[in-house]
Structures are given as C-alpha cells and as structure tokens.
Length: 458
Ligand SMILES: Cc1cc2nc3c(=O)[nH]c(=O)nc-3n(C[C@H](O)[C@H](O)[C@H](O)COP(=O)(O)OP(=O)(O)OC[C@H]3O[C@@H](n4cnc5c(N)ncnc54)[C@H](O)[C@@H]3O)c2cc1C
Ligand SMILES: NC(=O)c1ccc[n+]([C@@H]2O[C@H](COP(=O)([O-])OP(=O)(O)OC[C@H]3O[C@@H](n4cnc5c(N)ncnc54)[C@H](O)[C@@H]3O)[C@@H](O)[C@H]2O)c1
Image (tube, rainbow, N blue to C red):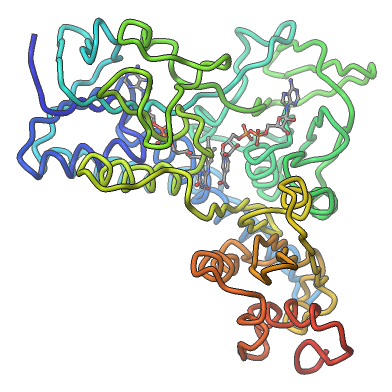
C-alpha cells in the first residue's frame, strides 16, 4: 500500500484545483478518476451545453429577426454544430490533463472505493493519506418506466455524441437540462415535445418565471404536455413510442430523459471509512466540509451543495483555506445561478416567498420588459426584472431577472448583495441609456413610491 499527503476522489470542479494546488506546494497527491478528466461540467454539462446553445440561439435569434423586418433562411449543419461542441470539450479536457501533469499529481484512472479509514483503492492501487477529499459529483436519475431500460435514450451523458439532428424529439423532465437542451434542439430544427409531470416548467422557480419560459418555448414551436407521466416506452424501427398517463401516444426518433440527479456515492463504499450518507445517498458534511470521518472532506454536488460549477469551485477555495487553518465556512456566500434558455433566467439570493418564510419583513418590486426602452427597441418582449428587499434594513435580499442575457446582468445584484448594499445605493446610480442595465435603478425607483419616470423615454 502507498501513502500520500492528499487523496482526491473525482476530478470535478473543486477536486482538480485542490489536487493541483497541494501538489504545487510539494505534497504528494493522488487523484482517482473513473471517467474523463474534468467531470460533468467539462465533459457532459456546462461546457458542451453552452457551446451547443451558442448555435441553437444563433438560429433562434435569426428566426426572430423576422419581427425586426429581417428575413433569413436558416440552414443548420448539425454535424458541424456538434463537431465544434466536441472540439471545445476536448480542448478543455486536455487543458486539465496538462495542469495535473505539470503540477505532478499522480492520476489513477480507476473507480475508487474506501477499503478502510482514509484508505482508498482503485484497480490495483491502494493509497492511505491523512486528508481525503471526495468530489465525485452526480449522475442522471433514470425513472422506472416500463420499457425504458435497454432503449437508446439520451441523457446529458450521450447527448453531445449526437451525429445527426433527430427530426422529432421527446423530452421527459422540464427542469434546467430539459429546457436548455430541449429548446436548443427545437431551435436547430427538431420537432419537440416536452413532457411535464406537474403544472409548470421549471417548478423550482417562481411561478411567473415558469409562465414566461412556457410562452417562449411555445414560440419556438415546442409542444408542452402538462400534468402527465409516461406510463410506457417502446422502441421499434428506430422510433420511440411513448404512452402518457392521459392515454395520449407520442412518437419521435430521440428521447431525452432529464429528471434530476443522484449522487455518485454508490461505488465509494463510504461506510468502510465511517462516512455517513443521507437518505438520498449524498455525503453528510458540516459547515467546514468535514464528513463524519476525521480527515475526510466532501465538496460539490455529491455533498448536496447547490449543483453549480461555480459552487464546487468556490468549495475548493474555502476548503483549501480551511485546510490551511483559516476560519472559513461553506454557507456564508451569496448564491447566484442562471438558466441559459432564451430568455435567460438570472437568479440571486432569496425570492419574496423564501424571505417571508425566513420571517423577514420583505418586499418585492417588478418591472416588466414593456417598461424597458432597450427591450422595446430590440424587440425583446418576454420577461421581467424583480428585486426583493428587507423593508426593515433596506438591504437587497435577492433578484430574479428574466430576459435577454440576464445571466450577465444579475451580477450587478450579486456584487451589491456581497457588499451588503441597500436598494438606495442602486437607486442613486446613474446607468447608461439605453441599456438593459439602465432598468436596474428604475426597478429600485419603484420603491420610492412616487410617479417619477423610471428612466429616460419611458
Ligand atoms: C447538462 C448540464 C449542464 C450544466 N450546466 C451548468 C451551467 O451552465 N452552469 C453551472 O454552474 N452548472 C451547470 N451544471 C452543473 C455542473 O456541471 C456541476 O454542478 C459541476 O460539474 C460540479 O460538479 P462536481 O465538482 O461536484 O463534480 P463533477 O463535475 O460531477 O465531477 C465528479 C467526477 O467524479 C468522478 N467519479 C465519481 N465517482 C467516482 C469514483 N468512485 N471514483 C473515481 N471517480 C469518480 C466522475 O467520473 C466525475 O468525473 C450542468 C450540469 C449538467 C448535467
Ligand atoms: N444553467 C445551469 O446552471 C444548469 C444547467 C443544467 C443543469 N444544471 C444543474 O443540474 C441539475 C440537474 O438538472 P435537471 O434538469 O436534471 O434537474 P432539475 O431538478 O432541474 O429538473 C428535473 C425536472 O424533472 C421533473 N421530474 C422529476 N421526476 C420526473 C418524472 N418521473 N417524470 C417527469 N418529470 C420528472 C422535476 O419535476 C423537475 O422539473 C440542476 O438542478 C442544476 O443544478 C445547471
């Protein structure tokens, strides 16, 4: 058995920089990875999906130019779209390999399991170390639907290997992945049906966010089926046939299953090292990322942290500080995220409902797109900007921005909140006309309660 200073299991967004940094400090680091280096984000998540959406939204925007008086004929070279996606993915992936090699990290390409306290085995390599960091992420949750197993359905895992555009697409699950990839393929030309178990898409977001997105998807020609489950799947002659709980039958050449994630802890044999899992299999951690086994830490999705790359990466920065004896925790951060549909959803902090549930005397103001000069000029009519404030302290608690490129704009709120700013600071700011950003002080001006115009020309 080998010994090392640090073992990292999984080359997710936090595990890689931790391995690199500790190896650069001269410590012996062994990293176990059972699949492609770089984890979900680079190989099956953010990177390929956003490269894919660049093409999809280019097609969607070109189609929408019609309402500006510009006629276009759209021809999608789908193999070229996907080749570009895979090239970007490969270049990111090779970059990771080089970073690890340059730092001197020993990479073991194998599935790792605990065989004792802080002792890990993968293939014929067994290593013991005083510090073990688990960054094993999640994988697709697959529903138990009759006939589904054994069919060539898609998940985010094999989606980016597509070589030809499916003429028709069925999507089970209307969350982040279902909407991003479903809208993407629809915009590239697949006739798309979205099967929604509940009564709205994006059921984790505010109800009016769901309404805007449903309208946008319908404008892209996507058919939405609300309040139904899939009872039966059949696959014959390269065609999927789905029977829904309302008796309806749908057919398509491709089926995308995206109903959520499950933690990659099954193979870890965590109990061998005294690491407790919760009832869903996520690793239990305290506020310093420490598991129930001394010296073993867990970060990112597998530790039930909010499932975003920037969270896993920030976990790395915080855990590194903690391991260097700094007094840091994992929970004192402003959480933002975005959904890369069109229109985009940029979110940060608390919604009004969440704030009120926390007993805060909160208030929300909302500005629809129809009040924003830039939106009218550019022909973007869907969406709204919302800010939530604490009426007692005047501090900004959260924001929801639904509209054009709001994933960028939401950072204004993220930084204001990180600085502990009040809404009056935003109200005083003189933003540039005519921009989308100009609407943010206008949003704050709604709290003044008088009839002064929000911004020039509106
Ligand atoms: C389609 C899709 C799109 C997404 N888009 C975004 C986005 O736009 N923005 C965003 O912030 N987030 C996005 N996410 C979420 C994001 O990808 C994850 O939150 C992020 O990758 C963080 O994951 P992680 O660091 O916890 O682990 P992961 O990146 O999942 O890495 C875990 C690694 O551990 C390895 N592993 C697992 N078990 C073992 C074992 N026993 N032994 C050895 N290795 C093991 C896995 O093979 C994997 O490589 C997206 C996710 C998906 C699926
Ligand atoms: N832009 C981003 O940052 C981004 C993009 C994609 C994914 N992600 C991350 O990945 C995670 C997983 O995404 P996801 O879309 O798989 O999960 P999700 O939790 O966002 O959505 C899953 C959806 O499937 C529905 N569902 C669950 N079981 C079902 C069933 N049996 N039949 C039909 N529908 C069912 C749920 O109600 C939900 O609406 C996200 O939570 C997010 O953290 C982030």
